[in-house]
Image 1 (tube, rainbow, N blue to C red):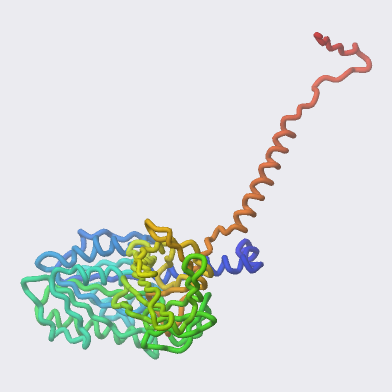
Image 2 (image 1 turned 90 degrees about the vertical axis):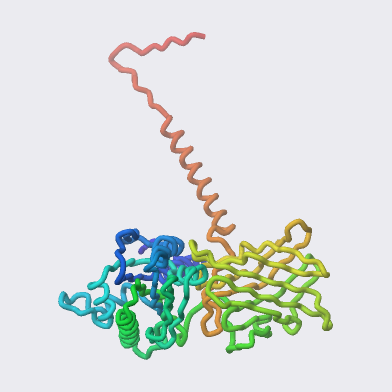
Length: 432
């Protein structure tokens, strides 16, 4: 704690501490508990989660979801909400009472106790794994909106995947009441399935362990957008151009082509298309006009890595002077829930070409946009900046000099024979 306080004593230390704490909070918010129970099968064949172990999204998809959605009894019911954490169970499940019925999680606790069950305390981004299963599921997918399982048309010849989106905890006036209503919904759906004789496995989780701060004042690093704009248009903001939509945000002060052309007029930007239908892939395309003539077209495709939880630009295409270039923008990457920010993104080159460009004052967030505002910025400046490297090298050189000096002092030996004034004089013969 003393070391942290000293490190945060100056501006550079403060920024470093903020970055470390932000990464720590992000890591916590992406680790969500998952509860599993089944009326038709045992979970003995599934890996057991040890204390303190986090199951990554890809392993959760391959080792847990896939086995539950295959075979004759591959009916999986997924209950998902926006927020769930171990602390929620501690606060609202009356866990310290040995005779507790589960508190607001009464129905969930009953199913976990009565049926074959498995609990995973920490799963990294389970929402991404669920989205992946929905896309690759070979059976029938049902999205239940009114929480009425009696209307679901189950296919007896194929596995069925039922997605039940629960009420948002963030939008509930009382968090405890929100959990109670969702627990009642889970109980009602499961009892309807049991009444119909449907063999199923159920899963209860959330997309995050933190509630969305949609109505709270948030301190953010980087640019903040202004009022909401559902149309997704470019506007002039903070001496630059802001693309403001409900799911993708982009700000750029200037796009420089080569060493001479500068594109920085907000009125010349026009959005030609954007796509953000899921939480794994997003795209944005726009043009820049000069005197009503299109002189540049740019398209970006962003994807999320299920393993690392980072999003990045996987494909960037620029059409300039009627020539199309594939520009390398792989360095534009940030953790899920963060925006990418860079004051000067220079030396962007195209493959197999001498085309170069740079982005000044660039900030992008293609996922998890809330209140039309950028989330905390993941800056392009690495943790070990030039100043830090200079300090480390100078310190290393100083330490090496000290070690050399101490080694020289340690090699000095003192004489071990002395003249005795009462005895014979010591004579040392020197051969010349």
